[in-house]
Length: 337
Image (tube, rainbow, N blue to C red):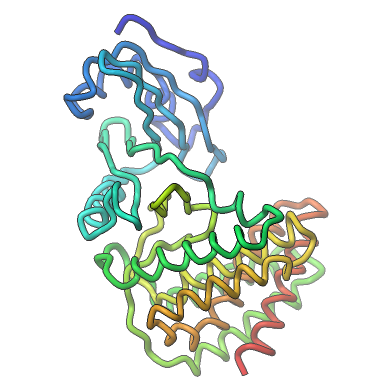
């Protein structure tokens, strides 16, 4: 290579990700990439790395890799992990082959390689606009269209995607929820009583839930993971893929819309219109049975979100946590009956 760009090399560090420095080093990347890239891209001339998302202690860091080659300029997304996540690459390959290829209407990014020595996943950078841009914009028709496309993507995924990864059962979820509740109790937060009441109601509600058919699950499906391009809807971020109750992914999106409304627009109900379009579109595909578990799942995710907020120890996040607890209690009181 004739030129290397080190502009981002020293700007990120995380002792919990042992290979982070090497994975972000253009020289090191230049040694591994030639065997991983399509031959039609040509020989690499330069490599640039720009960090996109890194939260220390979370076990991963996402960055963009821009390559100048003898055939042009190409961009990839790289994600380096604390642990070996070859499984993410393999899951993306199987999902892609099942009907979510790069050129399909409902797609995922094309996985390019997993560089095991660097614990680095590489996949295509997808052109498009984050769905959040449309949902936070002032145009109601744009919001509705974005919500509809998210719902249609998810419905197709639940219908045809292969069942991969760990099975996320209701019993597993209750164990996780108990941990979230105990976070409030152990730290003595002033609204720990609300968290306790919400958890107790979730346990009681779970006893009345019937069995449901499990399917492929994204795990963290929100509008932040969906890119909209001309003729294509693409979902990214596959670290949390699993086999789960489909209502979990549906509820995740609906609660995220509440959180977005609260954070950016001042009310948990600010995006209720988009949420209604999302749910109606999903149900209209023939998956109405998910509504039987939806109140439980939404309230559960409210408790999970409140726990993430309250540990931040800022006034704004604590207020948001209490709002989410209130919303979880309201959902179980009104929607579950």
